[in-house]
Length: 194
Image 1 (cartoon, one colour):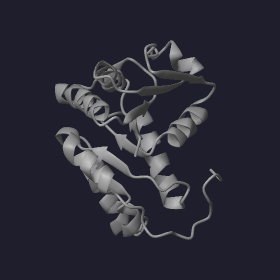
Image 2 (cartoon, helix red, strand yellow):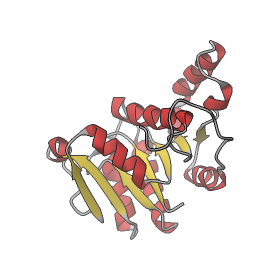
Image 3 (cartoon, rainbow, N blue to C red):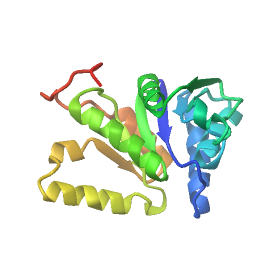
Image 4 (cartoon, rainbow, N blue to C red):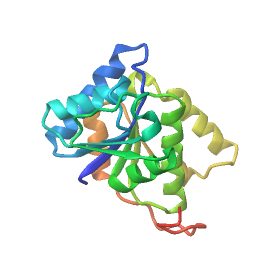
């Protein structure tokens, strides 16, 4: 594993522990020589994780659509800042550049990115670990909903297991490092057919 994509909010949220954890994650990635791949903004939790990784000497790859570069105030001092045309290009490029995926607290965009990358894993488009960092129980209601979806027969238990859950940065990195791809699945698409 050489790079981790982090999905997170462009707002800081109301709980200061979200920003503190984003900074902890940024520093931990740098300490392990793991590149941060993220949405390219310098505001909110996105800015916290990137700024901390850069300050700790880490490699940071930001990917941001042109239309958002000014609105989200792009992190101009990224090791590599890639400006793309669309949100679809952004997500595809982040997926291609990362060896693992982590969601921190965030809103619609974070959930969109998390569920798209989980769906790609379910379909066999990629074989990379996906995790949430359950900061202060932020994702607990979402995890309960996923369990409900399994109970309702709309998600197979083996696919529910694709989402790793960690409460701390050290536990998160340990789980990502130890992760092994599940048995091959016969699905409707192959890698490269997204």
